Length: 514
Image 1: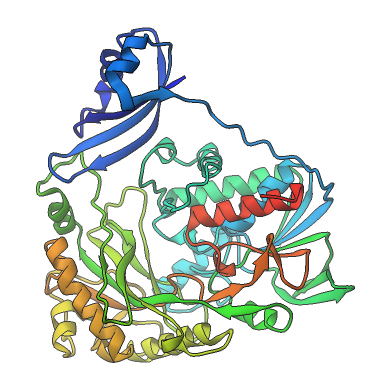
Image 2 (image 1 turned 180 degrees about the vertical axis):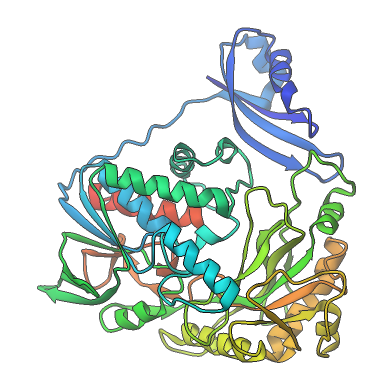
């Protein structure tokens, strides 16, 4: 097996890939698969491919192609239950919990999963009711329920991790209904619509392997004996196991309050700001400088920093053709997020526009950052007028520090309702100042980012966990059989890194090293 790199094709010419490979290796009898694909839109627009080819090639081809050809050998991931672990209880059915459970079950461990929220279908009904009535179920919403918060997002599958085991995550997602292109696209995404089905299929596999999943089952306390977790108490009674995995989301604030009594926690830096919306067609033109139906909805990732500022700013979780949605999980507190369907065909594109903060803003103490989130979300709820209406503002009015009276060409996508207001007083002046500077700087990099009619929606506060549950070798400092993983633990962020954290925790449990 060989790998060929740097094969370029214009959008719409993907059908010519085999002919291009044939011409490069000067062979006709071969099979191939796409290994990586990225879009290069810096000048002339190309898709750039890496492909795996099952064929022997002549030495002269290696010399001719030089750095663009090499031998390829796939590393197999073999996991064994070397520690003879019998049972595990997973708290949380988000990516880290599901992939940890899936891996343990594959190795023959008896696994039970408890999830405070509903299954996907019941959860979707609760969310739709919330979007149209403003009636929040605090246990089953966009933050809580089967699949975790990422199920109602863009379904973005990017990760900074270079761990080769990440590929196993993509393979499992694909085998359970994810599109094939997530195996090779450089910026893969599933979309909330397809991801819901994938999660349901993973649940079926877990049950088929003997796993048990309990919905509307919430952790409320720990029972301790001899320096170990003996059992956990839930709203439906006690549950006992050998290993206990805390696969919490970053919104599990009541659980963080509980854990503070038993384990070491610390506040960690995160970022806050707004969702910013533009017309999708404007972002597409800004990136591609042309209209082309063969091109995907455009994305961007922008940063801003200045040495004398106490915050850096950046865009995050960009949702082409997406919606701004409420990610609230507590009464009278308002937080927002972004979501896209697989086709990304909505009128607007949005992203988080945020500034980094640390203890200089949120103060000292293990729960200080979490409590700061609550303070901002309370202010946003009041600013929106209550009933989970979001406070929104035209960008020009935000920059001029005046209340907006209504929209321009861009209509806010947020439901259940929104209210035009002034967002300048939502955050500390230093944060507002940096965000305004960032908008000006980012507009120079992406023409139109500073469109006067762009819409800001507050408050974006849940960019990552405000808490870190201190751990070593995937267990808390206090208990060897209590294992915090995923985004809520403070060691991961996003679907893939959380799923990988769950996989690695399972390997640590089974083999003693990850």
